[in-house]
Length: 115
Image (cartoon, rainbow, N blue to C red):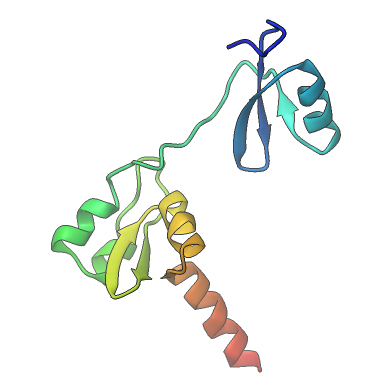
């Protein structure tokens, strides 16, 4: 991919975001802790169906026992009135739109135990 001046872009990782940046932007990204130009770029697939498939025939218990394609535990989430089994990327998206997932619920439960 090329920018408006015809220069190639560099793949950069800033936090959990992957971006294609021009040279100047890549330098700025590296100054704030990003990494650019790595030969290996790890991109996680938010469409991994491993966890969501459990929603069809499972419950919260079977969800928590299921692993996604990367071997991480699935999370039980509630979005509106719908309960879903999601991987961590999908759970983050669900929480951004107002859902709650067992990772955030367990943190709330832990806090309430102390206060």
